Image (tube, rainbow, N blue to C red; front, side, top):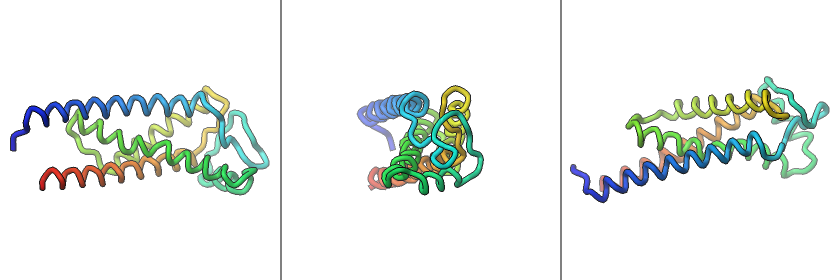
Length: 164
C-alpha cells in the first residue's frame, strides 16, 4: 500500500517531534537528578544527606517508608523515581523505531532504562552530594517498563486503527 504525500510528511514531522520531546525530556531529567532539590537522601538513623551510596536492594525503600517525617514523602520520593522514567519508556522506543526502523523489545527498553539510571546514579555519587542508590535503579527501571507498556499499547491501537 502506497503512502500519500501527507502521510509521509506527517510521519516525518511526528518523527522529529518525538525526537524533540525526547531531548527535552532528557534535559529536564538531567536537571532534576543533578541540579534540583535533594529529596529523599538517606532517611533513617544514618541520614539525611551527603554523598554516600546504597547497594542493598530494598534498604532505602524501607527507610523511606519507616522514617519519613510525613506520609506524602514515600509517595513523592518512591513514586517520583518511577514516574521520572515513564516518559523514557515511551519516547525511547518511538525515537529508535522512527530513525532506525528497529523495533525494541520490552526487555531492551528495561535494560536501557536501567543503564541510564545506573549512569545517573554513578554520576550523582561522583559529582553531587546525593545518594547513589540501587533502589533508584530498580524504581527507575520499573518506570521505564511502565512507559514501554504504554508505548506498546498505543502502538498496537494505532496499528489496528490504521489497518481498519
